[in-house]
Image (cartoon, rainbow, N blue to C red):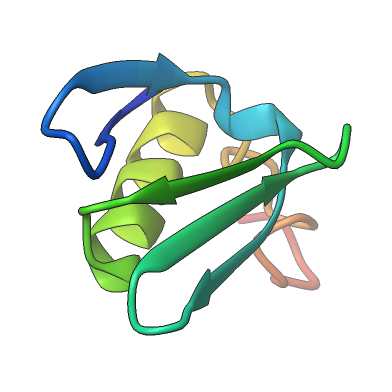
Length: 73
């Protein structure tokens, strides 16, 4: 889960596993795989950083093949 902030200033947690796209129009719009959209105050780069941090915390990026490495060391 990642923490993001709605335009009204209220923070909420979002399951990063369901994020399909993140766009900036200039507000950051997060679209989930369900089609639900959230417009948030957080900059796109910050949301991306939080997603990567979340994936690392659940060891989703621990697999070298997912990271793009060919040979496991």
